[in-house]
Figure 1: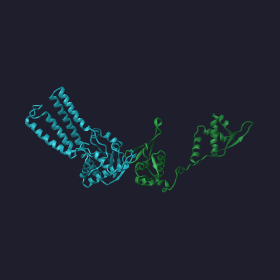
Figure 2 (figure 1 turned 135 degrees about the horizontal axis):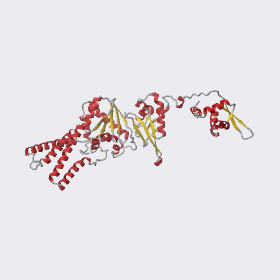
Figure 3 (figure 1 turned 90 degrees about the vertical axis):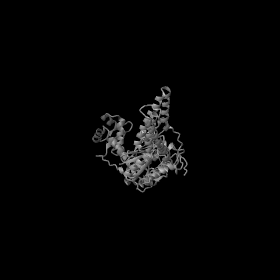
Figure 4 (figure 1 turned 180 degrees about the horizontal axis):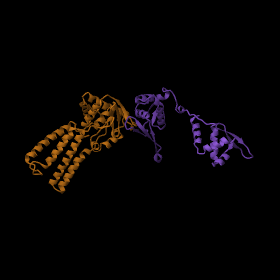
Length: 199
Length: 272
């Protein structure tokens, strides 16, 4: 199951009426949204959405029926138990350490408008504050950094300095190879916010 | 050797304000109250300045402040004990003459220290030296500190360098748990440092040596704006770091006097 499906299932199960609704599904051969809504005292749209979500997750089957009026769906349970497994490793791009992203040459962008705050020990950056928008709609976004990310940014070349590759900066900062995914992540975020320029 | 100046000219007269204030108040007291009271008020001001200078001497261990303190005390005493015109009868002629002789001696000592630049706060020299080989380049400023490399030294050597730079008014040290931070102080900016050192360092440039040998540099926006044109910020930080690493090397070799020689070689004015 991918993360989005897991999130949808989690959201369904977390509803306070979920247990009662599943009890109905387990008891009935098939049930419609209006029947469910009337039994549980829900709005019909709420019941409909819930059942549709379970259908999209292949927990329920549905059948279109006609009873002299406009068609509607009847839902029935097609599984006896629900279990799900999410592979978190799939959330980051698990490329080799020597991949092309480590060769990207980067430096701080000129007039980036970001404020770097150093840690108490002053040997790494603890957060970056980025100003977004203009005038009255100007907002600030604060990104708190992990220590490896902070050490990496501490060694980021200045706007007028020669750009360095990510791997060179990692080496200068003495960062462990296990932290590379989070380094690449923060670099990507800061590139998107125009704080870091790459070439 | 001639070095082109990269810092803006210094027209600050902060250092003269206390002296002008003292003379002004003395003159007003003389005019509205009387000559005796006017001279007495000037004498009191000089004695207060002597106490202040001695306090600065205790903080920096710079000899010129001891000489200044002595000079100010003696000139205060001289004001109230002038031979043949003493404000107090308890000063006989012999005591007055001794004060005059001591005053002349302390004046010579003070002038010697002044003209040999021992009394000069050398922050401007530090920033000029750092900028000598720095190219103009715009839009380079960033508030981040920059790692400036590493060098080897012991904790005792670092503390020794801190005392040396403080004594010679090159950079004032701030001792932290894991490092010593040097803040160069420019002439006429010294009062800001002396009266509120913690606030002073907040928007000033610094060079930090940690106890593992790493050197970090931060140039403040205020100090960067002091340059006539926009310089390559990266080079400037790097050069400032290298400069202090050289200072450390000189100190470790027992050639600390070369630090002062290099700074004085720039030939900046005595009061800038």
